[in-house]
Image (cartoon, rainbow, N blue to C red; front, side):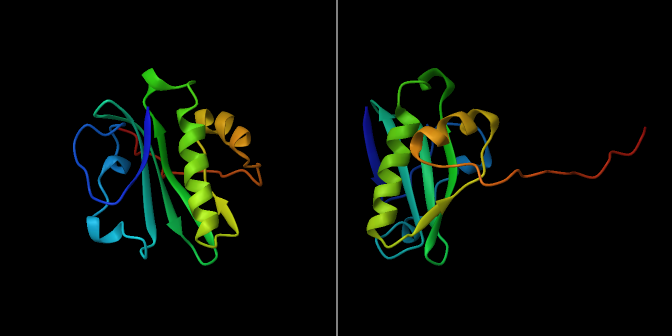
Length: 128
């Protein structure tokens, strides 16, 4: 397994099927930019990813994903560890994130603590 920080855009073969899968443009991935994207590779296949976004002295952990067939192997924890080390080296004093149920099981093991609960709402659907 290879864990790497991307400094060039990639497309195709990335883990997950949602919008978070979209590549960050190359000009946003340099050393002096607000985004850092990390991936876990099994051969040439991206099986995990996480992004870090600068936010005034802190960082936002975004789009953490590990392919279900590769979970429970330490990939998520390794990605987070690499991201957090780099964030601290860049001067981040803290990192925050929102979690899915699955992620909520991982993040405490990576050093995060629960600080609140997020309630999500959507408009009611019209009755047909």
